[in-house]
Image (cartoon, rainbow, N blue to C red; front, side, top):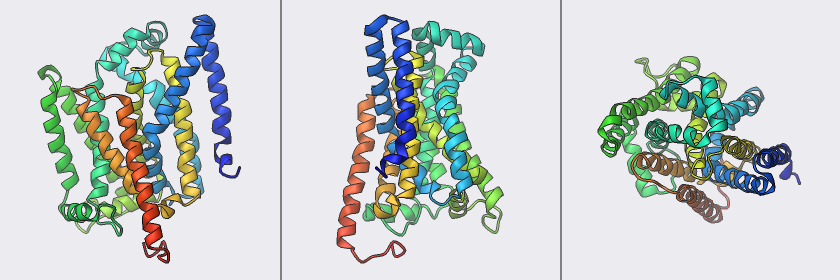
Length: 357
């Protein structure tokens, strides 16, 4: 029951949302539509949770060092941004800007002609994938290039850590990956996809620069140092909050796009993804308060490898359709493997303290 208390509000929120989904379905098609709406909402919620569990682990690795004030901001303001901003408003903004339509016109389109709304949003999938893919790829690269005290795949991670000693290596690899992925895009869309990918890189670097300016001094030459940046973000504050929100946004792109493969009803999509987003936030706090990342030493590794896989999948999806179940299963596979490895590590090192790890 103590564990369940972390999810009391989520359960209540889910019940309210399911009642709302049932009402929406019933008013648009009777009992059959109501049952269909309930089923699809639950599927979307489960999909969002499975796709975003690695997001929760990474969030927890950052959030565990924050003070109570910024944790509260993350769970209130951050929750509103995650649920309403990224799952509802942002897709509408994308359609409004790219289709040269007014916000009111797009909202009317989403509610009354969801198929056309979905088509307009999906038409810009490549740009969305490039932006989110680049941001997530940099999150992954900066993790594997970091010289960590403990390694999951020691033979690989120790070698990758040597590359991390080269300035801007992660950005270099990201740009090379972006240029390669452009070969999968048709000529007419290459420039906008390139711009979207560059913006993904710039946003990541911008948050790092902001965190350094606000909380760290960087190197002697005034340039941001990777460890200083990571430490500044980990302390919380505006920079850390922005980092987690952009990270969540990058994850939500995949969920929103994937949701349209299941239904075109934007209201049901918002409700289903909102339920999932709420549980992901609570899982983040649960992982922090229970010290799960300290107990399972490879869990953070597994989450970052899942993020790296998701980044590559997002880039591949610019040309090839990747079923959402594959995306979700890859993430779950890395998480499960890291938990098993962590249990084995703890069994082989029973007297090793957390500080020694």
